[in-house]
Image (cartoon, rainbow, N blue to C red; front, side, top):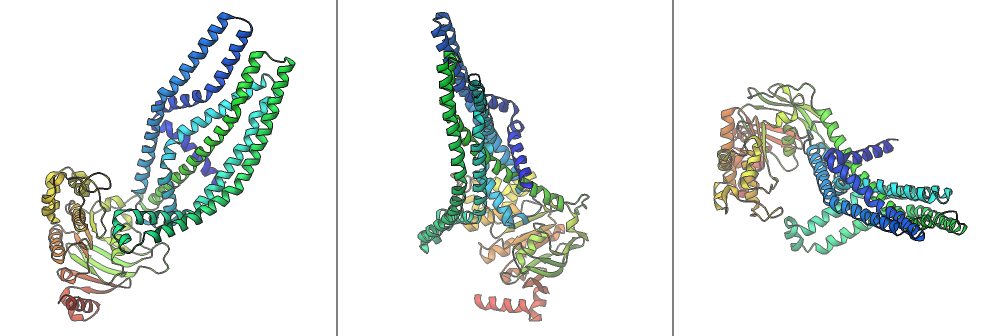
Length: 596
């Protein structure tokens, strides 16, 4: 029953999508869809009338009926042509509505935990693939409704000659049900194959996009990628083909039943004509309608297929919306505590633990440390020690699986996530390459002040990006990137600097997270950036956390936290940890020897 309710909800969404997006256009689209389908039957009736008045040798009747036929064609075709662009516009608006809502849900979940779940990734991938079908779904449903109405009208016309022919449209029902069943089976097979097709899509991107192009050529990967891509598609496609093949047998049998009924109906009409049970005009109209019914059923089946595709996409969309809203209800407190305007005590981590979805071992185990207000903190440790995971937890991007984080004594879980992140800024080692103008790509780090030229210029200066901006053809107005438009491409280090400038837009954050933000820069640039941010936070009482592998930078921090195997191994300043002779001293000595 759950599956049925979900399908009904998805169909309801499809039918409401047009009016919700643009009610006047939706009314016009519905009218056009019905008139478009009614043209064939209308012409068949008019043809019958022409024959009737001609047989009665009524010149005036022929003129009137011929005029009516011409007027009918002009109205129906004119309405269709006039409504064509309205239909296109409604489709565009509906798709925009779906995409906007999708972005709003996926982009505003309190955490990014949902992205770690395979089922969520599959559903979001399905929505991205089907968003055009969903956008067209109302129009498609209206055309299907018109096709159903046309078939029923045809049955009524035929029944006026031979009453039993009223049931002829019912013989199309088995074909419709068989088509729906076949589509359900195909949909199940497609969902089961998503893990393979998703991998195939990744391999396609690796083989055909610029970021991976160097390694594809250097290691001669193209043919290997083609082989693996074909293997994944073949395996997934084979499963889909098997499911389709079995289901299509019923479709063929149902279609054969309709053909037999169609032949019997034609025989009954011919017999009625020979027996004189109907006028010549009515017989001609009925034969004209009968000639169209086969095509009507084929069109009906096609539209049923497209509507089912759209309903499936709408179901995935509604599922994503439901899960996103459910996470908000679970995480966002009903009566959130106020985020402090300024830190007085600092941030305390107590018994913190975390395990990623699908992983057997936790990434953090019983982490405990106090980060004083105004302190600059360096997180160091070998790869996989849990440094980036701790940063994500501090930003509220994940929920701890154990322990808690206290902000001036208040549990982070009691704070409204958006309010907390509104007082946090961050720069990561794999920053988003946001292809806007420099002014916008930096300015959106503080949306409320994104149009302030002085604020943007100051953020660029803090990140050490003045020379980069000066070298660009249009300065802050230079368009960046070449994937979205014909802009200026930046190097990896320059993109990193733009991200660092974006992180510098927010003034007086309570927490500044720098997760290896200078991985693409040299050691001196990293140290200068860290010092700039550290000086700011010492003044405003915020906490700066730098994740780094460079101990020359870490030694300048007020506090150094050493992580090993997901636990805090050591805490102290540089001199204290050197004298302790522990993990930090060992790593520092090794790095110093390497660069000596």
